[in-house]
Image (cartoon, rainbow, N blue to C red; front, side, top):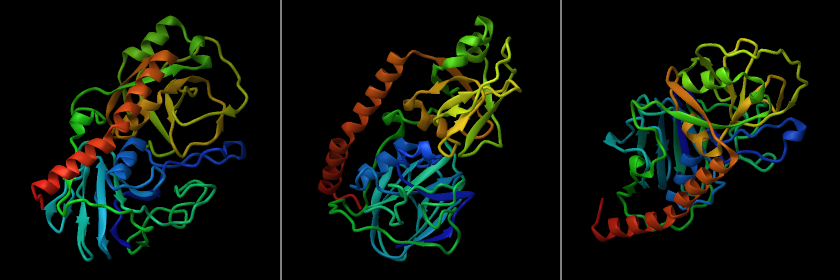
Length: 329
């Protein structure tokens, strides 16, 4: 069992999300940085659908009420376990009574606390993800509060050494280097062709700043507006997380995990799956650039990222054996 001492700005229980229900207006929800969740579940020996806690911007504190194996992934929030540093991308044993406390996140937006067995909350429509807009799933369909206690499912067998071990985010290549302008790739959508060639260049050439009113529903950007030469009235139609829309103000908006299932704004494109986790970690006020790619490029990038994840269990097993051999505590 885990007790929430301090949830930080936003903390929710999330898994890989809720699929197959958009036809009845139920969105995906789920971890914004799916890759960080996947790696945390691999580190803790969980199945891919195990639920974890998603913390936003750090500032959280939890107490472990029983012995556990945990992994902390995603944004580095200068976390400390009983006062001793616990880096991100690290897995280790914790003992009953120990406390994990984090400061503000420094290199991203979202951190994930994965626990061996996964967070035990009721599955709703096949997922334990919190849908904040619909107020269901997760822990009572809401953000976590101080004093909440979360139970954990039966733990898989784990031969992890006591002190655990960590992975290198830089070597994984899944986090953007600090100070580098992130480039978010997208596949053009139906209304992209309605822009003039000059405006298509304008969308991709300039930097767009992520606005402070962005959230799990959608990301909004500041920059030089782009407008269609010919105004079109569109009926509401189905949209997915990653859809880049262009509202009448000419400033792009990207639908995220908690977005509506339909909308009527023109669509510039859809962010490629491999870049959605990177987008989820971009901090408010950060500038990004957009780059149009074709479908074949998107599939090739996704295949490469899937390959990197597929070899992680072997690398983790080797790292665990090495840590045990040399008695890391």
